[in-house]
Length: 270
Length: 251
Image (cartoon, rainbow over all chains, first blue to last red; front, side, top):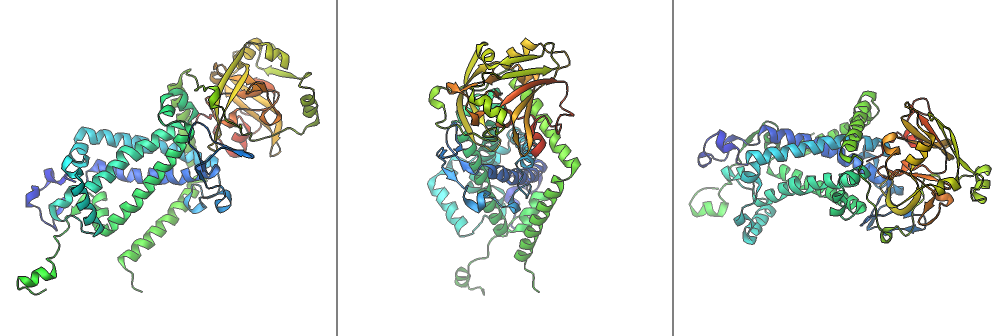
């Protein structure tokens, strides 16, 4: 992220090892609010899913005795009909009613937080400056280069680490602009009251059962993001990364040591 | 014992997970926290009512009707008196309308069929997550309530049903906003035929902007009340009392 530039030394003078301001307060507040909201939404959502562990496409879908509609995902035979176990659901005992209480209360936190953050990001230029991919970054050769660098666990160092690379931009953009808005809109589409209030939503998603399926897929997109995100934080230096998201201060990764072979050529001892 | 940084993170994550789960279950059984969650439920109801106004639920075409409409909750009423009525096509049956009304009524099924009818193809959404589409026909609830004449204190229409679930009589309720919504009907026909026993013969409620558990089946009596307190568990419906489902079933 480039937010450090305005507050500390010009980027050109920064070197690996320097402590810089990285994430702004609003970003940090939203990040941790979102952690709480997504966690509760996911765990209570899995409990709600347990009540009918089948997913369909289209306007309708039900398991009428002897004549079930065609489900594209059917976990009803898993784990005795309750596919998601208590350690990952809220509450940990089966209660559709309680899960709904949690889900529809924390939905406000999730929705208001992301709406506020997106608005702030738009108004302050955070989206344009830090998140929007540039044309050159989307070139296949550049994308492939970044994928190879990530696969080899070679992450940017020094001032370059302040800019999101294209894979980060795509991942964060996917969460901010696709998965979170998508999961909120498909969630609203499942409400019969909202269908009457905002009829076009159910048409956009191709029916209530399609919206329910997409809601679940968005949730698993967020889970996939979570695991990759945590893996990258751990690989990139968990204490530095987590500190930057709590206090805002981030130590620029040091430039990698000169490879052994190259240093020998220069006559240095490794 | 050597504790690596990675090991510490693992222990920390496991500890946080346990705390999170234990904490959530503690919160879940805390009255004040549940109160806060239920406060959000009230906010949801007010927000939806504001956004909805008197808009209609989506209506579908004949092609959209579910091949088989799932019957749920009570699938029948073993009570011999009900079974006798069912066998005679409810020829001697009458719907009782009483409580806070000017004129208590006993309305035979033939009378309900003779009132102005509304036919609507709508989606039924179960609280569990499934949906089914069917065509419903019957008089508007508003017509029936207007025939009885509401007293100014009447705020809720309570539906007393013939079935019992888990040993308790089924009942449900709506407020006057939904009672007088044009799509709120007392359906006696489904997909062009009289309601069968699994679907709530002789009449069931259709209140199309709410979930399935509000769509009371086997309605025997409609009681107008000023409050839901003091009736069974006070929640305004069987599942509200038995499981804690929201009385407002718009989500």
